[in-house]
Each structure stands twice: as C-alpha cells, then as structure tokens.
Amino acid sequence: MNEPEAQYLYLTTTGWRSGQPHQIEIWFTTLDGRWYVLAEHGDRAHWVQNLRRQPAVSFRVAGHEYQGWARVIDDAAEPSLAEQVRARSREKYGWGGGLIVQLEADSDPPARSP
Image (cartoon, rainbow, N blue to C red; front, side):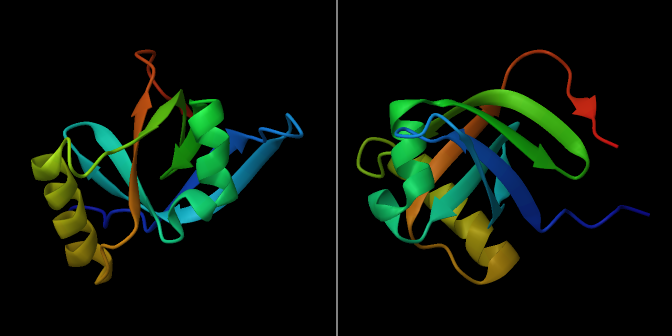
C-alpha cells in the first residue's frame, strides 16, 4: 500500500534584511526529482524576496530535511515546465496560480528528521 503524498513542505529562507531564517508552511508538488511551490502573491511574498537575493534554502517534507537552492520559474522561458507544475498543483490541490518556485536538493542524501 502506498502512503499518500505529504500535503505541506516547510521552506526556510534567509531574510534579506535581517539575515535570520524564516520558515513557511506551503503546498507543494514534485516533478522529475524536484519540488515546486507556488507564491500566490508573487514577488510581494517576503519569502520570494528572500530567495531571489539568497537562493540557498533548506526545506523539510515528509520527515526529510534538505539543503539546496531555489529559483523562480519564468513561465515565458519555460512554458512546458510551468504548465506541468500548474497542472500537478491543480490535480493535488485544485489550484495552480501564482509564481512558480523550483526547489532542488543538494546531491547529498537527505537526513531524516526526528
């Protein structure tokens, strides 16, 4: 029996003004070994402003912690990827709007959190 996919991802960015870690709980989808989150408020979201200035992030999903990086997907430059991510989000949550952010883990194996 397969476990259902986790509903939330916990993303930690570094505050671009404060330098302090900031964590959010957010819906996510996966595609080709990467994680994708959608920023409903686009560049107005503080966490998006943070990762645009410092793309190194950490995130936790389904009990695994990852170090990695984030990048904003340009829908015009990568329309196929953008549509795939939006379709997966609509399938999982019934919503697929907003700015797409791709998360990729560093190559080291993930550590299981307690």
